[in-house]
Length: 326
DNA sequence: ACGATGGCCTGCGAGC
DNA sequence: TGCTCGCAGGCCATCG
Image 1 (cartoon, rainbow, N blue to C red):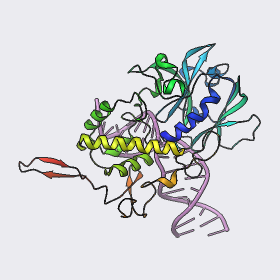
Image 2 (image 1 turned 30 degrees about the vertical axis):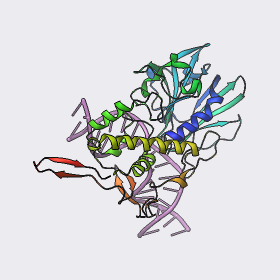
Image 3 (image 1 turned 180 degrees about the horizontal axis):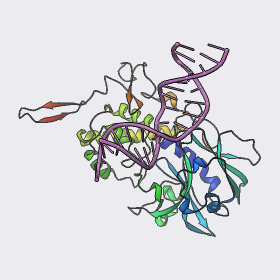
Image 4 (image 1 turned 180 degrees about the vertical axis):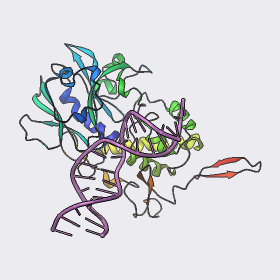
């Protein structure tokens, strides 16, 4: 279940291998993995063969690799999303292949020689596509890359693939606008967890880190987003960042080898989870057993003592005032 | 316009 | 033992 930290581990692993790499061949074994590729853009294979990838960039859970035209940056990028079970693996040519291989790029790199980039995806929630780059709305770099201290080739490449443009910046992005996020959150008439999972508000958070952040901030997942006091919302955002940064430092969370980093080694960090998947175990803070509740055909994990449900309270005037458990 | 919901997928484990 | 069924949750089209 790759979320921001897992995708960043993949990005960082791919960056040195794909930057400057020439794509000499493309094999698509399952066209369902091209569901986000528009035929209007052209044939996927033809758009890639003979072009170079210039960098590895990430916004939230989206990855992309700007493509060159000749020796100069072009107007397109190879976009990858790992979905639930996607992996991007670097392999020596001739390596016997996994049965779930969907797409293979044959690569020739000026320093690293020939290798394969294998897109493996069991459940095909992920995808690859070639997409047009468009200018970012705020003029900042499109996403995170290792170039130029996190800004790809300076702000000159303030570009983002069209299909990623609607995705908000993630909370680790230097250009993430905290005020805009808090204002949008205050307008959201939905539960706080839904809002955290809404990639157009804030990106990179999935079910695992949503539960972990809410536990850390002691906020109930159904707390109305627009009733969360600004100070509490700011605390929650701080916890989101801490949780993501901690996971990143640990190399990403993994389950059942679904998530595998770029070299094929399993990630870890699952032993550090406080709430997600911890139902029945004592809350690390107060000892109350963690519970799991149905949520959006999924589940939420929380401490029923630390994370009390929101209760509206009537005032003397009869109006309803928000009460937020501390 | 915005919030909620269903569909896409398949390996695996629980339960009969 | 072998089968069925439900679960995992990313994103997006569609519905209300």
